[in-house]
Length: 146
Image (cartoon, rainbow, N blue to C red; front, side, top):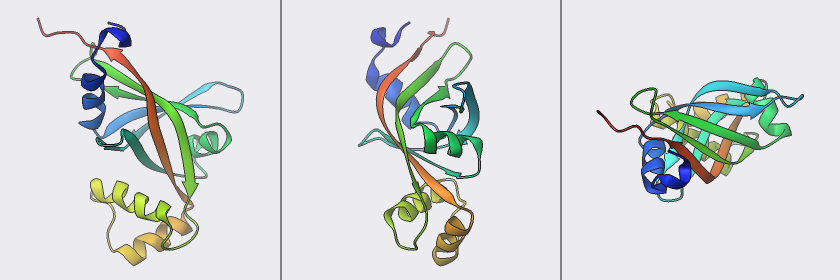
């Protein structure tokens, strides 16, 4: 089924109910670059957050071009959702800035945050950046169980 045939709420629930997806960004020559990512979805705002570094391909791509999509697999091959939007970035540079607070939430959701002062310093040292996307379009495929 096309996205217009599916309940947008059902598609969003799939995205919000998972933490793993495949991020598609655009390389310098326009070639798609795919990367497995952990993400955090805010059900109230429909905002996705994830963490990467400025040195990784997805980070460099998003710094150059914010257009991206997140593919979220469903229960099997015939079920998936794609979330599109503008994927804005904020590089962690100063302890106490909002981007580091959001990075902490992303890492804490997967149990990888640890001690807060050390976490903040590590985010800055590793050139971590928060990737935040307000989802503007959802589409996918739902194949009912036989």
